[in-house]
Image 1 (cartoon, rainbow, N blue to C red):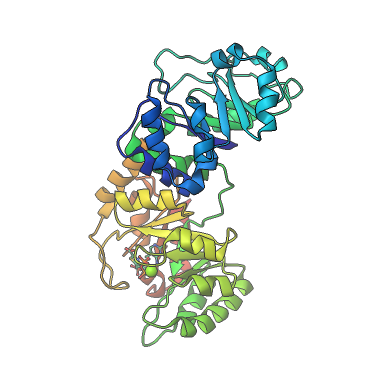
Image 2: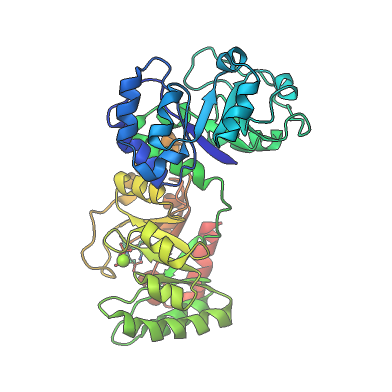
Length: 409
Ligand SMILES: Cc1ncc(COP(=O)(O)OP(=O)(O)O)c(N)n1
Ligand SMILES: Cc1nc(C(=O)O)sc1CCOP(=O)(O)O
Ligand SMILES: [Mg+2]
């Protein structure tokens, strides 16, 4: 589903900044709809939108501003469309504008000019922002693909829970308004979340083994121990060594993981993850930012990010991390410079905030986790756990792995 954002009808504080961030987060189309806002104010807003993004905008009002700002999208409300002579559309198309319009009855698609590149049809669901603007289409509605050859975009009440249904109805995309602007401070995070629902989610294991070295055990020894115990998600976490030293260890870990059919995740070193074509890369808050790493390693490598607070979780969602390592659960000597301990209460509060915001992302608890902690951790809604010492220090790692598996299923 293509996601289109329609602006809030009124001017919002810091709106140009939010719009620029939406574009940076991958928004391909923004409909600038400000029915009662004077032209000068819209002009001022456009001046503050980064020039490179302006060609992703469609104007609902003040079409005369389009050329000066390099805007090629013109939207016509139903009323505006009916007031304009039909030959206007081909004239505008010949000037390379992208045309869109709004419809409220699917029957109108049969007679809609094919010069329109796409059309909004709605309300498909009960509106989030307009009180009393109720769904007009039945829940088993199916678009007839032969009435209008171009894209039909679902409008009205579009949010995370009904994007799939709109797709089944035959809509090519969704126009988002209330889902984005209900809380403008959350607009970018909300958009990133909805966008992440459009792509197939990569597999993330519920048990992450974190490698470690001690005077008696190398990283490779610890990885072999975890693999023999049954772990199939191995994170190579080498600290205080340069990249050149990490690379050969990563190659050895790759061979070992391949032999056991396990997935290897590289901590901290994006270029090492790319070189060995690891399954994943894990980045902390002071490591390379997720978008920069994504640009480097591509879309095939799973990228996870650390969070220690609600603000970090929001950042990771905005950045498009595939999973979030949230910690520390309790004190651990495996990691230096720990952040404040979250405990079960911290996890419960953060998971409640996730549910309230409608966010879904695999969250992995980390830091001093033992098998006995798993039931209470999982009761907060946490997806999985990361462990190091609980496995490397176990008397019988295979027995401990079995115990973990029992608690995780
Ligand atoms: C699954 C998982 N979650 C969190 C971390 C911690 O990463 P980071 O904050 O970068 O700290 P270091 O591990 O690099 O010391 C992790 N490694 N794995
Ligand atoms: C690597 C790491 N990151 C943490 C964080 O809080 O971000 S805690 C941690 C150590 C995990 O090992 P153990 O299971 O031995 O405590
Ligand atoms: Mg790190």
